[in-house]
Amino acid sequence: MSMSRKEFMKTAGKGLMAAGAAAAAPALARGKKKNTQSNGGFKMEIKTRRLELRHAWTIARNTSTYKEYAFVKLEKDGIYGLGEAAHNVRYGESLESIIATLEKARPILEHGDPWQFVDLNAAVQAVCEGQTAAKAAIDIAMMDWIGKSLEIPLYQFWGLDPKKAPRTTFSIGIDTMEMVKQKVEEAAPYPLLKIKMGKENDEEILEAVRSVTNKTLRVDANEGWKDKELALRKVEWLAANGVDLVEQPMPSQMLEETAWVKERASIPIIADESVKTSADIPKLAEAFDGINIKVDKAGGLQESLRMIWMARSLGLKIMLGCMVSSSLSITAAAHLSPLTDFPDLDGNLLLAQDPFTGVRVKDGWLILPDGPGLGVKGSF
Image (cartoon, rainbow, N blue to C red; front, top):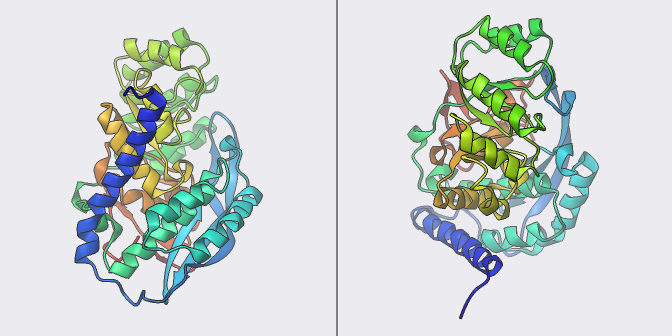
């Protein structure tokens, strides 16, 4: 009996999630449930918090000086998990829409079984279209609770070696040339830099960066180049100036043009805005060398893990990205970093003050916390 491509991908996606759950089984067997015998689901608490940035953050689309996000706390049997909804206007999200989505999910969480977290997550994902940052916050908190209940770090739950976490980049936003230089100098402890481009002054930005450092660079154009010949010229110019990959050179819908650039480029082309969830990945394999997975836009850790395995099956490299956010969201993503090639987990490093502590960075290397769950400390 023949199966359509759509049916195959749907079946494959379910199989990948089942495989992920099976991989977690040894950790479940090793761990011990800690006081989690009562009936009923989670009690959810929602708070909002304003995060001030150290510098104005400018990319090809917009500028911001602070982020205001929703945070969730899921509690059951005296154990709680925390999650952060680092929303992005690029995907039709606002603080109000995030809170509304969290409230829609509240009855599901109150009546669901936390230990059936795959089904519980699927029910949360189905409450509405989009609004993945809200769904990510719930899934992050849920997995934090699971790890804490088993008294093991989340990376151990997944069977991962924290020593395999690669080096992360540190991002430099678009700014005046003097501020670009200052930001690069402030980033002295980080051996890999990611430079935001995609406006009219790309050459000026690179000249400013190169005037103060000879480090290996990565570039994110944030869909800034609208013509394929221009994009290729930019990519090859960057490659000649010590850039080892370029992220999202063209608008997300221009896959045919991006494939043309990829075929001719001498360095990898990585998808960012073109990919949100695992459903997007199959159509990207011809246009990109890799994908940027962001837990916030994927809808959580479970979907991010599924994306990693699907991308690997198609021969794609993995960048693990983030929004500008606190250490809560960044640490959640960092627990997946041993499975990835190019971590870009620096959103917390851009804040003036971080309300949480978790993953650390030493000489660019990600140092995962060894506490249970996410291992994040801080006041909700």
